[in-house]
Image (spheres, rainbow, N blue to C red):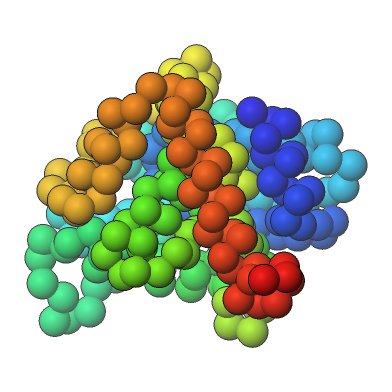
Length: 234
């Protein structure tokens, strides 16, 4: 998996010497694996970057408080970390749907990352997330768009990076179990129905077919983007 992290980082220029990287730590298998792998990759990358884990405490929206669970693990890693509260607008309706939950959490992450002097914000989106997002965009918006591995925001002040884009979800789950990462409770609210259907559709295929579908969706979405930008001849 470190080879796949290295591949993504080198192919898309995700990390550079002197970067200060905020790692979005939900507490799930993807974000805990992301933090662990970025710590390991730093040992062999050939350059130095700082890491700070940021966990958004969602008690204001009815989510469980995970600070007591995550603190010992983070201290054991020896990584800098911050717990920041989820601040909701006064007119925000509860319970939050997936879109509003994600929007509010990302706002908290961007604000915290900026306050901590971070120029990169790393998310734990993996190969299956990329495939599902691509297929959902095609089915429900008619656009062949995917999750980008590197996206600058606010004039380049903070850049979102996704170092796990080449790693399947099942590999991250196995890694988290093998490393005995904290096991957080599942989200208490119902997930987006359409996204669940697409995820189940992709899981209905065999392992090799899933890998082929992920690769084809990525190839199609990135080829389409390159053609629009003029990077590839039509």
